Image (cartoon, rainbow over all chains, first blue to last red; front, top):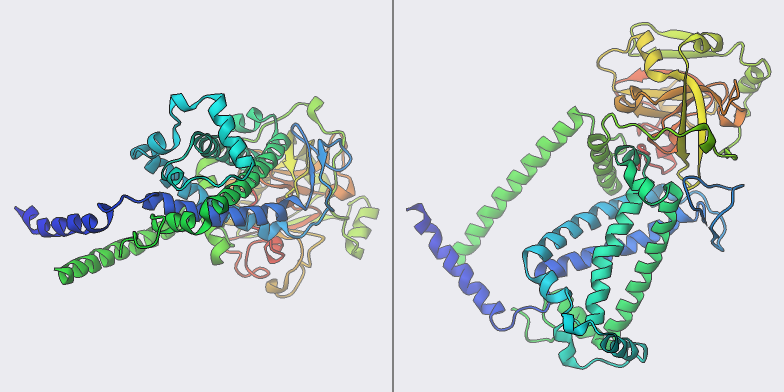
Length: 246
Length: 265
C-alpha cells in the first residue's frame, strides 16, 4: 500500500510532461542534444590536442615501426615541433574519456529508443543512386532546403550520420587504442588488425581528417538550412521560438 | 502541489548527491588501496589520467608485450637526447664503467651496490620488443639484461614499498634535499617493476654494451610504456612508499615538464 503515496507524484510528472511534450515532440531528444554538445566540445579539444601531439613528429608510416632515417608514407609539410605533446596527451585522453562515455550513453539511448531505427536507418526505397545524387547535387549547389525537410533526415544525411557514428567513431577509438603499448599487450589483435602500431597511427590521422571534413560540411549545412533554427533545435529541442517548453 | 514536488525533488537530489559522494569516496579509497591512482592525479587533467591508468591497470594485469624475432629488428634505432655531459659520467664512460656502481636502497632489506661485472653474472634475458617514443616514432630492438624483478628480489623489497624510483646521470640525484632533485628521474609502480619483461638492460642488438646514446651503462626497459619511461644512464634505484617528497612530488621529472607519469597511453 506504500505505493499509493507515490501516485500523486507520478500524476504530477505525467501532467508536467503533457504540458510541454504533447504540443509537439522535440526534434531532438534530450539525450541526443546533451551528447551532441558534449561531443562537439570534446571534438574541439581533440583537434587542438591532436595537432599538439602530431607536430612532435609530423611524418606518417606504414607497418610496425617508423622514424627519422626510415622511409615514410607521408611527410606532412609542417616543421617538427616538440614540447606540446605533454599537455596534448593529457587533454586528448581526458577528451577521449568524456567523448566515449557520452558515446556509450548515446548508443544505449539510440538502441533503446527508435532513434537509430527511425531517424538514421534509411528506407530501402530511398537507397537509389538517382535520389542520392539529386540530394548531393542540391547540396553542392548550396541549395537551401525547404523548411519541411528539417523534420526528418534525408537519405544522404542518414548515410552520413550512420558512417560517422558506426564507422568513423569506432575506428578512431580502435586505432587510438591500438597505438597504446599497454592495451596492445592485452589485445594484440587490435594492433595486428591495423597492420602495426605505425599503421594504426596513420589510419587514426586519416579518420581524424575525415571527421574534421564532416564537421566542416555539417556546419556549412546548418548555415544553409537556417543556423538559428537548427542550433535552437539542438539546444532546446524545438526549431522555432515560442514552441519551447516554458 | 508544486511545493511538494520541489521538496520531493530536493530530497531525492540530496540523497542522490550524498550517495554519489559516498560512492566516490569509497571508490577513491579502493582505487588507492589497489594502486589505481597515479601520482599526477591532480587538476582536471588528473581526472582523465587517473581513469586511463586505473582502466589499464585492471585490463593489462600480467599481459605481455609482443615478442618479435631477430628478422623484425629495425635497421635504425633512433636515439633521443645526448648522453650526460657531466664530468662524473664522462669519467666513468672513459673508464669503461669499471668504477660504476648501481646503488639500490630505500625500503629494501639489504641496500646494495652492484658493479657492472656483478650484474652481467646474473641470469641474463633477451627480449625483442617494439618501443614507441611519445613523439610518435618507434622501432624494434633486442635488449639484453637482467630482469628488474631478479635484482629486486636479491635486495629484498619491503612489503610497504609502492614505487621503484630511478635516477640516471642526467639527474642531480645527489642533491642534499630530495625535493630539489631535477632531471629525467622516473618511477614505476609494482605492476611494472615485477613485470616479467621489465629489464635492466646493458646490451642491445647483439652488442655487449649499450651505445652511450641508448643509456650506457645500464637502462630500464618497460615494453608496455612509451620509451621515455625507460630511464637511461642508471646510477641509483630507490624503493619508496611515496614519491611526494621527491622533486615536485609527481613521481617523475617529466611530469614537471608537462608529461604524464603513466605512459602506457
